[in-house]
Amino acid sequence: MSPKKADSEPPMPGAIWLRSRPPARARGSLDRDAIACATVALLDEGGPAALSLRTLAGRLGVHATSLYWHVASRDDLLDLAVDAVFGEIAEPGPPARDWSDDVAEFMRGLRQALLRHPWSGALAASRPLLGPQALERSELVYASLQRAGFAGPALTAAAAAVSNLVIGTVAAESAWDHDGETDARRAMHHHLRAHADRYPALAALPESGADGWPEQFERAMDALLRGLQAQLS
Amino acid sequence: MSPKKADSEPPMPGAIWLRSRPPARARGSLDRDAIACATVALLDEGGPAALSLRTLAGRLGVHATSLYWHVASRDDLLDLAVDAVFGEIAEPGPPARDWSDDVAEFMRGLRQALLRHPWSGALAASRPLLGPQALERSELVYASLQRAGFAGPALTAAAAAVSNLVIGTVAAESAWDHDGETDARRAMHHHLRAHADRYPALAALPESGADGWPEQFERAMDALLRGLQAQLS
DNA sequence: ACCTGAACACCGTTCAAGT
DNA sequence: ACCTGAACACCGTTCAAGT
Image (cartoon, rainbow over all chains, first blue to last red):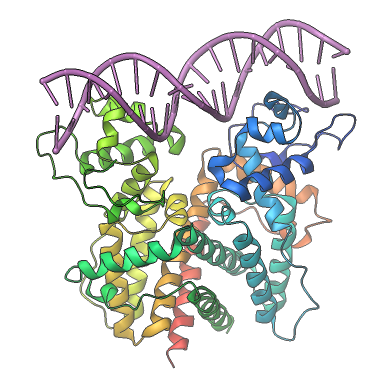
């Protein structure tokens, strides 16, 4: 259980951020940051399947059950890891003349950070993003959009659309990149051609390589930003 | 292993669709459809955590290890379940005058289907969607976009953006709805207000209720479709 | 071709006990 | 306040054996 008991929390993902953090390295050898860092490393090596409390504890030179002083569940670890990835988003430069350049910069930065950790896109899609680093970036997006003229429900909707498009896109990209990438694409293409009667349009598509991802992302982002611009008038 | 051996497949999600299906109910009591249906039911009841091969087998009146004749892994079950959800997307009506109405209809239908099964958004985001039902719907989207004038890389990008925005959005929505929905939102709001110094823009937001989701979705969809329209010129 | 049954090597989580 | 150690009730997956 967490140090300050939190009135019987339901097992909601993201909840770790709403509980108070035990004082960093008061005396013990563990703290949230060390745990988050080791968790990211483990996930980078083998994805969610490789993240077990026992191996994580081993890395930290501690017993598996010790982790329960700092986190309430394995799910908390995933929340910590995702927020650490958000912390990798490049710091924004000075505000551009056009608000959409600022938002585009954020979207590209988020994509890069999530792609660096192929497990993170799917996880970011699956849980509320309430960590301090995620909130800090959200704050900046809200500010940019506010400056652009969005307010009220339109502001919330625009910010959500921006994040959700990036996260959804990266999750899909990471899912394909899995490993046998080229083989998978080849098998897929063959499968579609074999059923050209059922999927004529899909079967007619060329077998595009992985080099198509960035261009695809730029196009999708351009469409969304243009549409948001149009909504402002 | 699957009946027709498939040359040492790597453990890639989505791969079940590229292997041949054992003849439906040749003599045994199990087949892909029955397994898919029971899997969806189990996931509806308790999410991914509730899906174990043993309980699933129990529902089907069979031993856990019997499932391995029909699927290669637990992951295959998730692929089957997600594709079943895509099968629930409402059939499209006759083509509208405006292509974007057709695409909007698809997006709303996909959102509804995914929301009916709160586990499915996150799963759809995390794996290639190669099932027959998912491909059938993709085929229709491609056809609509082609009719609108998209071709080549622009066509692929547009189709991907459409799906990824919906899936990303629904995954986020489902993650929030988890259960203590109102409590979670309340706690979140309180947390933001408590750190108004760090997140001034976020702290200033009103505590919106769950009724805001559909409107938010419509706004995001409108922005994307408008932007795609603009890209055509 | 399809299902059984035993077995392997793990899991996350609890709780009382230590310091 | 923080970590240990034993224990509980599970997992997914394998493989030889049945029919």
